[in-house]
Structure formats: structure tokens, C-alpha cells
Image 1 (cartoon, rainbow, N blue to C red):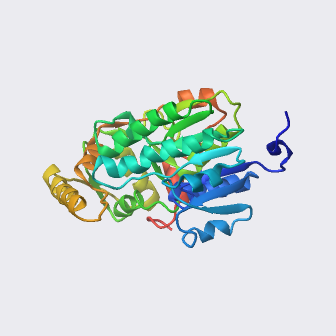
Image 2 (image 1 turned 90 degrees about the vertical axis):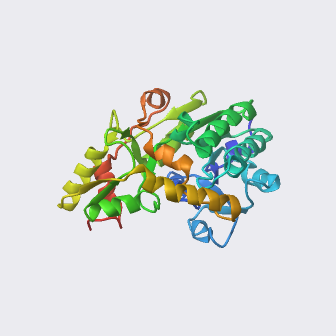
Length: 320
């Protein structure tokens, strides 16, 4: 049976979180690949620069408004859910977006006459839900997707730390390292994976192009098997900057004090902090290493940019 989708020259991708760090990169990649893009925008004014990309449409709404979500996904070929809450204190603050938002976008997708495929960006933190309310909300979001996604083709990606142009979370750390100081919040023996934002966006595109049989939950990283140690990262920064970097082991009490103060403030004030006791447990966890085997068996994707090259491509942190 021929549908309206079959008669379109370009497929339509509906995107949440399109004004964020990862979302902006993804929207640009989708447009370059020939997709028409719709972006859910809580504030049309703040998202106006996205609309300047030809073939990009803004849809007013948020994850709590089912009417806006229906407009967003109507007639779409694919839905990519990038929006998420990364700051907060209580489970409810995270679950309102990371769980309830997933349920609403899945329901809006499923209610279409010809449901589009749905890809949700989760987090590697979902692998360790006991560490923090954020990690627990990401695991619950994946479970909600599996339950609410019956009848649609869905998948979730679990990226590790994502960096690149526009990142505001990791770049301050790299700036400190470029100035010769590497603050270490946990064990020097800890290992972790990272991924450059373009590689993550390319993985999304490859999944959208894949046959509709590659659902599930997938980890992914930049191709560095076994991840990086802090010594690895420090060595890369030293190579790029040409200066030595001194390791500074931060005593746990010095991190616990501001984390607890933030937690209390977040309970009493309209304030969503980043550093909390839960986030501190995430930072000090010794194993955030990913495995690309499953995703590479499912789709035609290979990471292209390791940390050294990714930092070279990222402005504003150190060497020019």
C-alpha cells in the first residue's frame, strides 16, 4: 500500500532536544544527509538559529504537552529523542523528563497510522542505576521505552562522555589540563570511554538508514578498546599543548562538601545543580568503558575520531 511518506522526495526526522549540544550537531548532520527536520522547541526564540537551516521546522511544545508531541511526529519517518535532564537533585526532577518524557514520545509515535522508527539517546550511566538519581532515571527510561514501544521499531543508544564543539561539561576540564593542571576526582586506575559528538551523530544516521530489525540498547565509543585512563588523557593533552600537566588528586571531603551543599540547595530552592552526591559517585566510579561489538553487528557504523583528533577539532579548550 502506497502512503504519503512514499511520495515524498525527502524523509522527515522529528527531533527533541535539537537546541542542545548533541541535538544541534545531529540536526546539522540530518540536513546534510538530505532529511527534512522538525525540532520540538520550548522556546521558538531560543531555537531560532536552528530554523535558519534550510529544511528545518520548529514545532512549539515540550515533553509534557502531548499536543505538541503529536504535531512533532505526525507523518515523520523517524523520531530521535535527544532531550534529557542532566541536572537535579531528586528522582522526581530527573524522571519527569528522562522517564515520563520517554513514555509520552513513545506513545505519540505509536499512535501514528504508520508509526515512525524511534531512537532514544540514553546514557552509559544507565548501566549503573544504583549510583545516582540521574543514572536510575536513565535506566527507568530505557525500561519505559521497551514497555511503551510495543508495536514500533525502537532502539536506545548509551553513549559515554560526549565532547566536541559546543560542549560545556568536559571542556572546562580540558581547559584546566591545557593550563597544566589535571584535577582527578577518583582513582588514577579508573578507565572510561568517550565519544566525539560527530561520531555519535553519525551512529544515529546509520541506525536511521538500517533495515528495521536492529532494535535494542547499544553502547558505543570512539574506537579505543578498553577505554582511556587518566594517564592516557594527560599524555594526549601534553602532546597537543607541548607542556607538562601536573596531576592533582582531589581529596574526597573537598568534593563531598560542595556536593552536599548543592543537594541541600536543590531541595530548598528552584536550583538544579550538576555536582551532587549522586554525580560524585558517578565521577568516582572506576569503570565507564563501553563495547562497540553489539552496535557494529547491528548497523554499518565505525567511529572515526579518537580523543587526540577530537581535541584537535574542538576549539576553545587549549591549543589554537
